[in-house]
Length: 241
Length: 49
Image 1 (tube, each protein chain N blue to C red):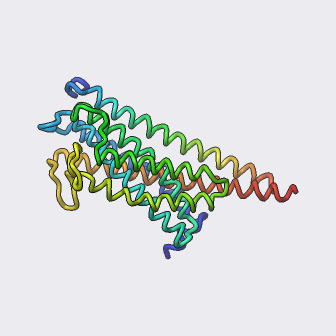
Image 2 (cartoon, rainbow over the protein chains, first blue to last red):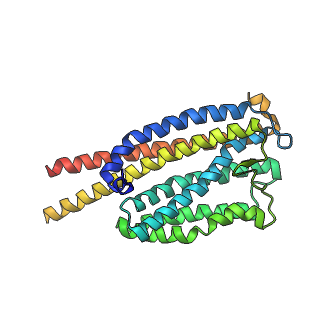
Image 3 (cartoon, helix red, strand yellow):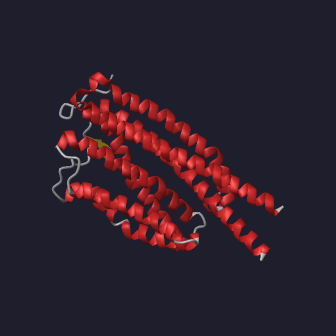
């Protein structure tokens, strides 16, 4: 099927009807397997049992960046291609991504206190993730600032695109500046983590990505229903006049 | 299992607990929003017929 066919909201609803439960089931299975493996994995030689926080904190960090990237691509779809589902996807990514970014900050603080001796430091990595969270909140605030979803979507898309500059800053902050945060232990094809901890991490991350997919699709479905209700209310008001 | 978590068990349990509670609230909010919006659309469509 051509990609443009998925742009039809009715077609999207049909796909979402079976894809949401499928993604949710995949998330439940992968998270159950990954997190239980993580809880039984050996303690880290430096961090001891605190390494267990890694199985949730790292996927939250990855998803914070992935959701923002998705939001930026959707913003391009809104501004450049005027794709009918782009701003719906962008708003849903902001709603779910903000929660994952919040959890990244909170679990990071709880990991940092015993490891670094502090919950928070104005460190390049920590600060850039806080900026990412504030950008999510800014995009969500813009969505609430306009009654017309098309105007709101355009304003939110501009902020999402401008804010995308922060994504590489988050990613490379530990390489560009001195940071209390450790450098990335995993990159494409390479890992400094022992397989006994790496596999639970990757399975947990796959589970959280599946959960994000289910929540994102569900939030998109909600937004389409909200717009349908809005259109019906406008039609009703026009008929009664 | 909790006894094996070492001296920082509270931090580990708090991280998992806050994550589970926050994601639970997000899932419940999205599900409630779906029910509310679906009901609103059905009511409005039935009034138009």
